[in-house]
Image (tube, rainbow, N blue to C red; front, side, top):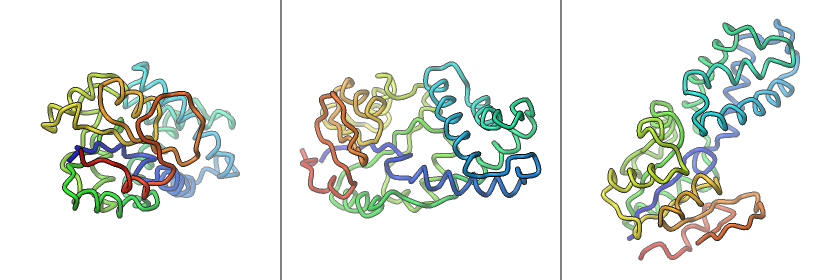
Length: 233
């Protein structure tokens, strides 16, 4: 049976829905309207742009974990002239980090799929670029933990996908081998190209059916289709 390494955010854990709920709660809790941020929709749009940029910097090693957590919120407030209010940015960051991992929305059929794969005898492992304490909490709170052998984070391993080193470490820690490992995830570069270049099998979860020119072993637009793939040998 193949050993299946799943990405977490956007693949199993519904990052967009969970994140937006947590952001809305933070917007109300800190009362951003009193700071002149009168529309949550505008704030959300600015935050998501800032967050994408900060995560790009983090993946490239130009920003560390602690800086990312506050800076994405400070940058989100630039539209209202509040980007230099570091205390406000840090308050929003702390509220978000303490709230979002407790959200439990999963991508459609995620629980059904991992449960059946586990029952078939596959070893299941989470391999994520997220933060150590946050990702473990997410997996536990949303009911995925009984089906996974381990949770491996770039934060703990010190290497991020798609760098080959994280795939090598994941094999060592999971007592697996490249010819028996399959990476399943939504990021074409981090999960699929990274896994492919490390000699692993790949399942690209591409719900929006975004066109690309990469050679991919398997591609699905919904998680339930994973159960029909030849993943036993």
